[in-house]
Image 1 (spheres, one colour):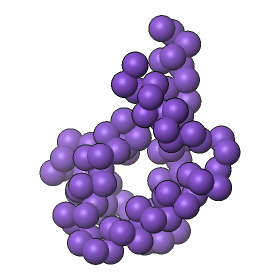
Image 2 (tube, one colour):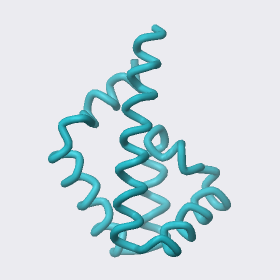
Image 3 (spheres, one colour):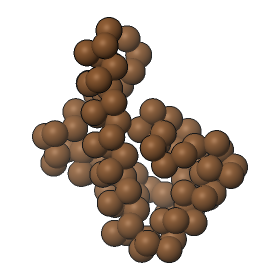
Image 4 (cartoon, helix red, strand yellow):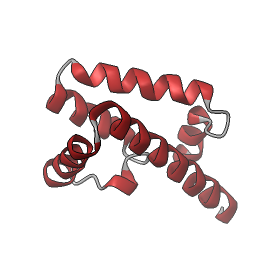
Amino acid sequence: MATRNLQLDEYSEKLNQLIDRLLNQILGHEAAQIIYSHLESNYSIQRHEIAQKFDSFSGALEEYLGSGAFVIEKAILASLEENRDIDFERHKILKLA
């Protein structure tokens, strides 16, 4: 059980870092900070919780950015495919177990 929680924490941290990097690259630092503020104020999602609340994050992003969220989501998925360090499917399985 402790090993599974440690693995989940590691995956979550890596995924959060990847999302943070992409938001800053795509939107710029100031806009990324506005997104984080919006997530926290309106959805109670803090930056370090995005991986654990990914579906809510995605929905909030779509509501806030409209079709522009697709660009960010696509970049996240492409980065996940390229990044062998983060196995998002395994992350979801660990979270559900």
